Image (tube, rainbow, N blue to C red):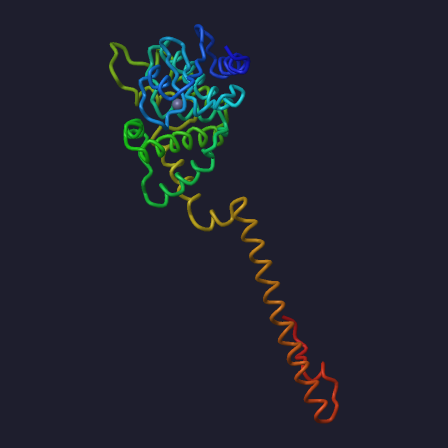
Amino acid sequence: MLASAESDLRALSAFYGFSRIGRVRVVLASSPAEFRGLTGTASGDVLAVADESSGRIIISPASWRGDPSRLGGVLTHELSHLVLGAKFRAAGADLPRWLDEGMAQYVAGDWEFDIDWAAQQGQIMEAAAASGRLVRIGQLDALFGGDRSDVQLAYAQSYSLVSHLASTYGQRNLRIFLDGAASPEATPGEGAARPGVTLDGAAHTAFGAGIAELEVAWREATESRSRWWDVLLEGSNFSVLLWSTLAALVIIGFVVVSLRKRRAYAGMEEGAETNGKHPVEEGGDGGGP
Ligand SMILES: [Zn+2]
């Protein structure tokens, strides 16, 4: 296995508090056909697949492009699926897809791809919030099975939810939440599928609020971010606003100065023609811009 994968795996085992991971093999597919054969996936958008049962991570040639050292975020993302998946499976607990994908993106940080996913993700969220397309948490997992734009929104929203929880409540509480959701006692017996109850209880323990309450807060934060003044005043947009304001001031200043000059020249001509009064006094109005 790649050295970077080994250190990533150690870090993720520590982060998720779960180290009972079997052998992990990283397979770099050399062609799209080989990737399709190994994973059974036909979509060109899929960058890698983590197969938990065999402990294999299969990377598409589009992700590693002949240079395994470029894998970075993709590998961390897939390793997160393996470790978090194993943690939940060991407890017999359900791991919702949004939480799985949200965590994988969160631990992988900014992905180093040709497509700038971090920026794209922000745009997808802003557009979805502005057009009322944000999906309820309960419906989010189904969105992963939709068309291309559904899938993109599903990834973006999953990431947004997890990073909102992490930035609002801190990483420590996020991990307490995962521990609670993956604890055997939190899972109802007889295989009864009540994932909502499990997650809700874990959320109360970790964040002091249930899933529905957290969802409302997250939605408010996300929608307010898509409001125009926030977009305008945010980071790089703010400097654009600042510079265009400064540029506008310079233009206004220039117009005022030219008008004064013109009036001054007019006064000069007038003065020359008439009684030779000082042109600036004649033309100047004494007021600033
Ligand atoms: Zn994933």
